[in-house]
Length: 166
Image (cartoon, one colour):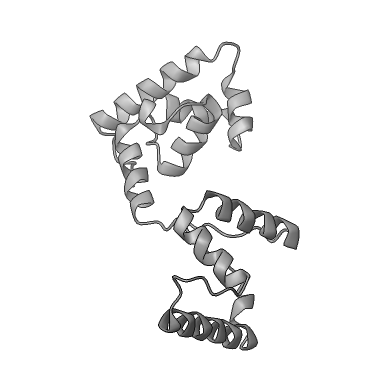
């Protein structure tokens, strides 16, 4: 079955990509193919000359190599990438680094916290009873501490990923 012909938009994408390639003085298609992990120069030629359509994965490789955005040569593929990103969750995981790194992260978070949070955390850590903590607030804090203790004892604190608030 013959390949489906490229749309005008895909041809324009290829032309813009080729212009970016030509602006890379001294770069050959063979070297580019090697940089992008293609088996040979032929694949690069086919993309640049609009013989085969670009896809998201290949477009990202070219953009990375040329130091540009995908939108610089393919607005439609950039839209596709944006759509994928819209439905992707940012995963912010604590590094599995040392306890020291985690402690530094906590200190940094405390230093950048609003003043009211700093006061609350200090009251809890120092187990003090400032005037603003009434009996209900103290009972709530004690309840939270008990809940956390149970959570730790059930092993839930050792989950493989810990999310941070951005």
